[in-house]
Length: 179
Ligand code: AR6
Image 1: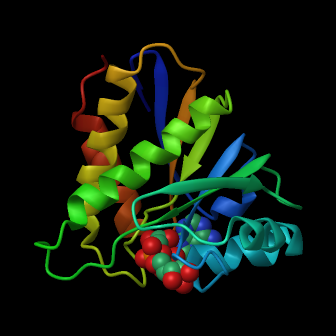
Image 2: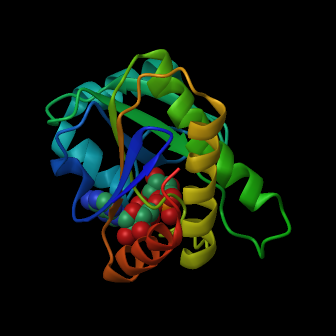
């Protein structure tokens, strides 16, 4: 656990659908109509209310984020963001992945949320290399917290489904200085 600009950053291994937080972030696709991986798990567990809300929104570009009800999930909201598909690393992937984290946090702040959980966006079906994704994710979250001093956030959890990601996130967080 680390504290950055008064916000706790934490790594948890497990299933994001079980998190009791204000919002869980979904690694969605541009249609917002569901899919496999964490997206499938969120829609399965949260029920049809989430899909109905996504249909009303109608889609989301890569790197952006939208917010809906969390249906039957323990969380209050789902923030759906669309990560980039990894295509070798020279197609703006890092900037787009960073903007997923930044725009999700921006939405959380606009809704005055305190506690947000992120999955490892793009590192499954979208094949983003895990270590590069972890570094970009943590760095962008830290930057956001340092440049947005007035905000509701108190705690941010990186929920890792795979042990390899848990280890990567833990290593990077351990090396961060409390700021
Ligand atoms: N809780 C937390 N993390 C999970 C869970 C879960 N229940 N299930 C999987 N993960 P992915 P992407 C991890 O493929 O790469 C979907 O079809 C998983 O181990 O879910 O951004 C969408 O509709 C991995 O580390 O998302 C899109 O079409 C991470 O979540 C596409 O996949 C992300 O893997 C998005 O691909």
